[in-house]
Image 1 (spheres, rainbow over the protein chains, first blue to last red):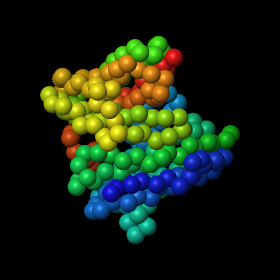
Image 2 (image 1 turned 90 degrees about the vertical axis):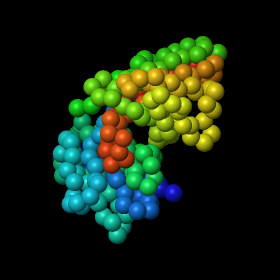
Image 3 (image 1 turned 120 degrees about the horizontal axis):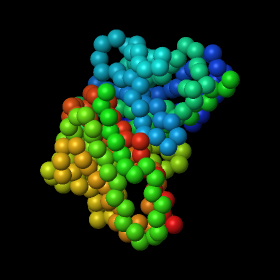
Image 4 (image 1 turned 135 degrees about the vertical axis):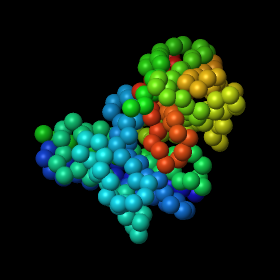
Length: 114
Length: 117
């Protein structure tokens, strides 16, 4: 069965510092990996995805993520955090043989302090 | 970009009331929409997959008679919480994708916060 793990409930970082939000996955076959962000009382917004090709993918708002097949990880990164990046971040996985369903991680709350 | 509109955004009602939540794809057609439930500080739990013109597919443990889903057109799916009780209070989110492929991102509505008194 496919699954997604986000080992950190919360990540705290100072504004201007680099940030990393971790994600590992378990899926048979080639995964499709996604990162979404959720602001309070809102739905999820798509940030970026990995389907195939270059392991480093760039997305919205300066975020990027690196696909690491050997470590089955897809960590979200940003070189310089902004206070406005404070939100709830979800990693998600789907794959072709898993049908159309997307499985979400538990979420990681990011706090960026000014 | 693709826009999904969810209405209402907030509902407060008495126990025993039935509540209908609408999910509309505004600029694309969605043969499939998804309904999620999110508890405070928790991830999204997939409740059901809504299929246009056919019955919804419910996840294990979700009562289909409690959570009625109708997907009568390519741009509208509705979730009705029947005879709602306080334990049904939650944040409900819908999503849709116009491509029908698992390698494409979902487009989410802004959610509906349901509070049952």
